[in-house]
Length: 132
Image (tube, rainbow, N blue to C red; front, side, top):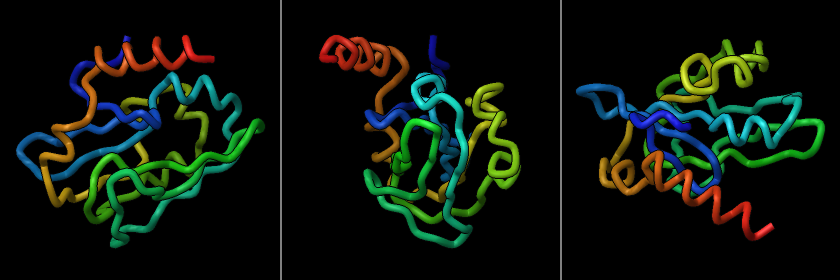
């Protein structure tokens, strides 16, 4: 259901380590996209900004609500996906490829390794849905 090569957070962000680098690409899961409904606005940090694991780095607004985007790792933003800011439909079309939001030069690879894998994220969602 969720791409196995990605890691996941409890706040529904995904993270992918670029091969042979210390760069992590971050986006939101298709589960989050479906929960949000029509996305109206996206606020992302500029390159050069520092982000901290489990702290907000931006916001996403839908017709339902505004949610903080939470960084899965600590580091420096090296790139922001301006294409998605200008074309919010990419979240629905392709949340895991074109729908990435930021790239972070990670400070500690252990933070990335500690994120949930696809099966753990699926289990987390089942548990979360059972609580509602």
